[in-house]
Amino acid sequence: MPAGLLPIIYLAFISLGLPDSAIGSAWPTMAPSLGAGISWVGVVTMIISAGTIVSSLMSVRVVERFGTGRVTVASVALTAAALVGFSQSQAFWQLCLWAVPYGLGAGAVDAALNAFVAVHYESQHMSWLHCMWGVGASGGPMVMAQCLERST
Image (cartoon, rainbow, N blue to C red; front, side, top):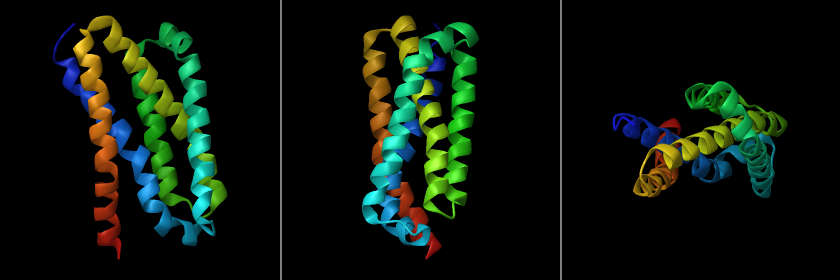
């Protein structure tokens, strides 16, 4: 398998990790404007998790039918659209609605790329893949802090 794909896959996992931790750091600022309580973020993350589980369970069939590349592109687009929806939400229920495509997209790209790397690359690349998710998850709150600082 071409080594040139690995940086793209690693970038995809960084971008997958970024929003996973950002909502927690943004929630204290978001909640009052949405009319939501501080603990309500758990509902949003549970919806995202449920979507991730469903799409992960379906990923084998979907990847077999459409291929890893198409599934990845569609999943990234779905996740990006959901994040735009998050940014435009004016009420808590809208955030819950956008959490569904976010979870479905994130779970599908996660499962598809994990399977691709497991089949086509050495095991060390799987470790690096998940390290890249950690880079994104660590960077999410820092990116969110910068965005919140600039908006006030």
